[in-house]
Length: 214
Image (cartoon, rainbow, N blue to C red):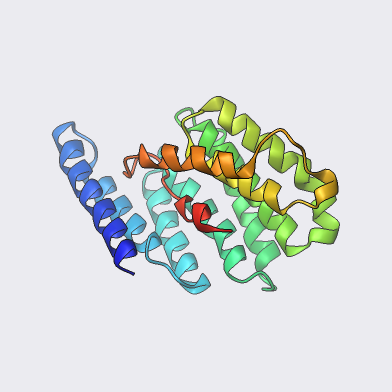
């Protein structure tokens, strides 16, 4: 608990400092404030309901600032992540359909970070596999790997595709795993990359919790 409090305190400090810096450079102060509030809420969610409330908050920001790609990104992320909070929910297919629409929209933004978008798309397919592994596992597992590998190539400094790919490959049945990567070594690499991140409203910073999954 103490570690979680420390991490959240550091994130909030970084965001407060970022707000000051954006104000100095003419960044829309209201957008910065809205995003910080939404991200603070996202960092503290514990239930599907809270995730959906946060998705709605990002949705409102997205409508107010249609040229910004990150609010829509976080709408999709909240929807995908909610599936992992309640794998058996009857709403999951509908939620993932909404997430897919948002993810595809992200490719139309000239300023979108494609490494992050492809990582999120791979995470979406992982959610599809999770809710129906027998049907979707064989159908999508190679696409998940391809998207994570693409995301890593697009930005080798992005820790999310590194740790998520390691976690995904670790869960694959032994007969379809490859020897291309060692999951423990990949997690160690991701740890170093996460340590270099500076949490702020301009880039995603989620995923560090995957380092703790055994």
